[in-house]
Amino acid sequence: MRSTARWLRWPFICVVAAVLGATAAGVPTYVEPQLDELHRADAILVLGGPGHERYTYGLDLALEGLAGHVVLSDPSGGSDEWLDRLCGAQFAFAVVCFDPDPATTAGEAQAFRDLATAGGWNSVIVVTFTPHVSRARYIIQRCFGGDVMMAASPADISAADWVWQSGYQTAGYVRSLFQPGC
Image (tube, rainbow, N blue to C red; front, side, top):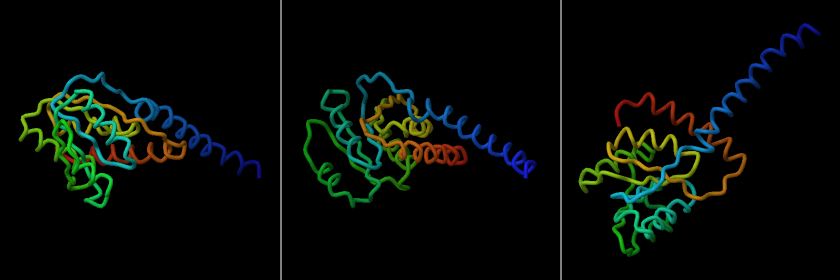
């Protein structure tokens, strides 16, 4: 019995060490990512995702005069009535809504690249939520060669969501590494 307990101790210690190491590495990537000091840009890109905080935050940034164009991603394919109403509203700046294909961060980056090329945009403020900032920066910069500033919208994230997001975002990073180009 003692040898079995001793034999199981090392795998347990290794698993605990791996979890603690991953957590420590994830804090600067997912919990406290690099955010940029915002200055005027050609456009504000609001990436899609759960909740509407990021959309209102992106619009608030435009109302502060940080960009003359706001680009809103709608990965719901038009099934989000709140976002549909927002896309149809009139603002003192231009609002462009699009349905990314595929409905991923890479699809959003590709669509923004095309809009930026057509509009002659050289700078963007990208709005998403905190756990997504680092991965979104990586993907957007692969597609868009201009100045990229990252902003995190205010959001209440539960402990369970932090755990889920760290795994989800890590899987997204791995997937991005195997996707060539933009």
